[in-house]
Structure formats: structure tokens, C-alpha cells
Length: 218
Image (cartoon, rainbow, N blue to C red):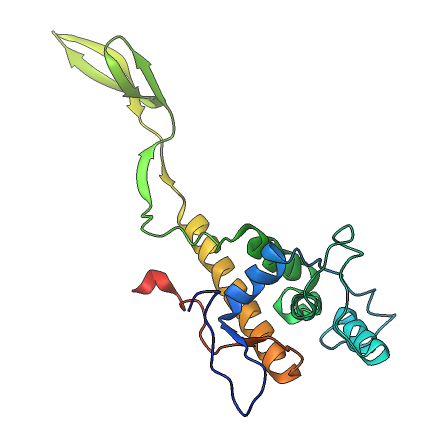
């Protein structure tokens, strides 16, 4: 569903925008320019959804209104729901990558990107090095030994040449990219569950839909 998707009014309540978690993150970080306020060190606060979310809760309770994000946007308004989303991301648990993953999730959302899992890429065996001249492109060879051969009645020593090859991209590069996608998706699943359980979003509803699981298998 697009970021403009909506659900109907229920019981006279306020209409909410229904967004998948990836779209909600992009709205918060890319459109609303929400900032990622990372929690202080572990020895300062207890683990949970993070210092940022607790701060938003306290501010809402104290002010009785939406939190103004002007401190981050030079006087402009950051939507309160975007602040909640950013605060939830800031509390990413260590089991999912902690601060490193929180920053990655925020930066990808800000850029409107999905992690590159190298779709359609297949490792190919290619020469380590090639040289081009007037006759075209040739693979570079190296001497790997010598052999004695009988040529025109004489024994001669000749070099045994081989062409060093490698795999490009290396299978581990592809595996690493796809692990990265899986880790990002798990982080988004955690953020979605936290936003749904927290019930703090006033104008946005995060739906159950998620980015594809292991899309390279389809």
C-alpha cells in the first residue's frame, strides 16, 4: 500500500493513514525529517524501546499535546507520529544490531532505499587481470613451471603458462549482501511490532505487511 493509503473512520474516531512499516519509516525520516536520537550508554538507562521513546512519552504527558520537532528542523514542525517512529528505531536492541542497525534503518529510509541484495547476480569465473592491445583483449598469464619438450630433434625448456582466475562477484559478497537484507528486514519487523504494541501513533496505522522475505528465492 502506498504512503497515501488510508483506512476509513471507525466509531467517529480520527481517520488514520495505513502504511506498511517501510513506508512509515520513509515518511518519518524522509518527509518529516525526523532525527534519530540515540539513547545514552547502557549503564545510564535500562534496555527497552529506548531513551527516545520514553522521552516522547514524558513530553506528551507533560505538555498534553503533540511534540514539536522544531529543535531539529530550524523552527519547522516535525509530526509527532514521526517522532515516535524515530524514537522507536533509536531503541533497536543489541540482538538486532543496536545503534549500528538503528542508523542503517534510518539512513535507508531517509534515502528511500531498500538494501541491495544483488538481485540476479551470479558469480562468474573471470581472469584476475586482462590486457588490451592492438590485437584485442587478452587474459594475463603467469609462469607456473617449466617442461622439457623435444622440438625438431632438440630438447628445449619451455615455460608452462596459466591464467589466474577468480569469482566475481565472490559468492561471499552475494551471501553478505543477502544477510544484510535479512537483518534489515528483521529490524523492520521489530520496529513494526513496537509501534503496534506501543499504540502511540495518532494519525498513522502501521499495517502487517512487510518487505519480501528472501526475495532471491522467488
